[in-house]
Image (cartoon, rainbow, N blue to C red; front, side, top):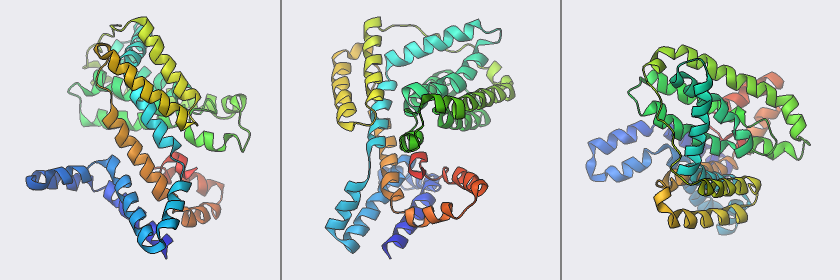
Length: 339
């Protein structure tokens, strides 16, 4: 009956995800234990926490050998890669050069710069996910939107709409190539999907939808965006050589995305390099990247025990039902895990 227990733990993890606001409330009403309530209120901690519950349950019911065999059979390459790429993509040299490029393009358009900047961050940057990977594109877009939109006094409607479109566009913006999006990577070799196939079958459609999503939202939010004023002026305060070195680290990690022994080694080297030139760096987003990686690792552990009900469910549906079912399931499971 272990599979049933694993499914119940997964259901509790999903329920916990939608209950984090309650734990944040407890942190304010019970300050003596505020630390633990804040921890339980972190969305990124939820799946990691419940994966530990699953591991302890398996250890008590199936024994040490079976538990270790299961955990060691899980592939944690994606969580490790997301951690590494987020740290590098969120550094000052990378953000400054991307901000400068977006700013230059925005100035060429015959529209208010704030609107064009917003449109580009929701369209061009997610499409870059096909080259620098989706986690890196998400990190860049989120940090640049933080400085240009979320740091201003904007309403909740704009914030939620921006996040929704950003998530969707990043999720499909990585389908122009066969090497950047984790769900594509998992099937590209088996189904012989190469670059021309991706561009002809998915890529051009994704590019149109990403552009359309960003354009529609920019139009709907034009009044709120017009009140933002000009976005922060991007200036290159970092030497060109340092930008080149950062780009080299980023591309090296992307190139060896399937080999943790390489990209984690590059990350450690990068942290040492960034520390040596701390005056050209902002704080490395190690904590934020670790939380996201912990979330994904928890999904890897919990998701591996859900195949017994998830696979028959999807296999028993027709093509249309699979489409809508998979779309709904991506709200509570990782895209790559579902693939």
